[in-house]
Image (cartoon, rainbow over all chains, first blue to last red; front, side, top):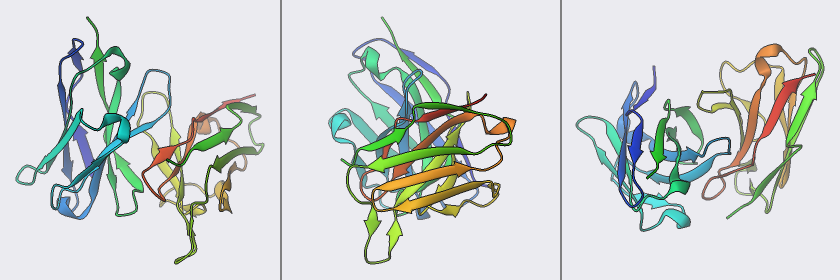
Length: 118
Length: 112
């Protein structure tokens, strides 16, 4: 069965960077995109960006451009999302989700809480 | 970006009754070449990730009960839950995947 397993919770200081991982199993890794979506406490869903594990190409939401880096390791079927220059507003649960070519998100990871606090 | 606006922000419905959630997009999400609406609905329960319920505006994901139905086209869409059950308490989000994905603000569904 399809599974996306994310790394554990992180606590970071303002200005630092965080890297969250998402390990995929149960399907052909390079045939589906991996999206990142975040959810601030008590808030709605916000799309961060997407990576194509097949060729490594990425697209991110305009507000994160320059701060987010998405990479993949095909040997371990793992995708990484790094967010830099963290500020308190980046405190959120970050989800990875599998998407088809139409950005329909059919399977989601369990979420990773990133807390930014001095 | 396409802005998605849901209504209401919250609603309370009695068990067994019908719940209706609306979603409006700031521009059409109907792709003319295949006549498909690039609109999905997700359900999120506390402490859980979102779960895909409906895509192409009206196609239920495998395993989703048939009391969940979606309708609409272009810019106006509706999620209907017929015969509300206790386990349907959740926040529901619409999402357009016509271009860069965007979500509605969510609708919190509770039992009256």
